[in-house]
Image 1 (spheres, rainbow, N blue to C red):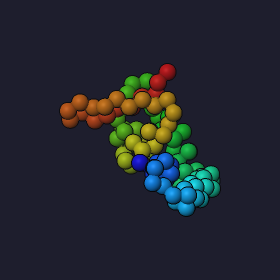
Image 2 (image 1 turned 90 degrees about the horizontal axis):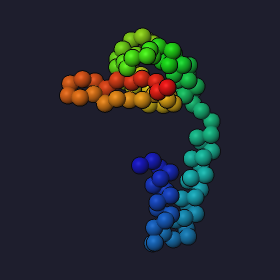
Image 3 (image 1 turned 90 degrees about the vertical axis):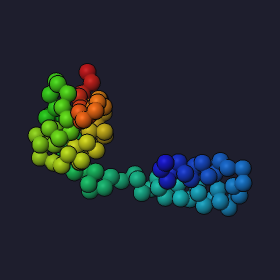
Image 4 (image 1 turned 135 degrees about the vertical axis):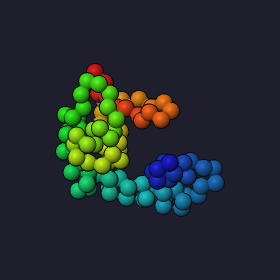
Length: 104
């Protein structure tokens, strides 16, 4: 659950006072203001996402194989793969790791 979801659900509670709603609203507005500008890491990751997309072939690949092709850690590759639109994750079975491919 995100902070925004928590605040929204809190405002919907029956016992929520007007003061609580006002504070929650101000906190949500602060989140909106903060999240409107991408961070340095987010900007850098956009270039990495392009490299990942270029490195992906027609066959499903593991995050480890993609990470090695791009020169980043497996964890970072897996996290960025989740953010790339059109990438499909196929859960592994047993000891086989998950694989990723671009949906056509």
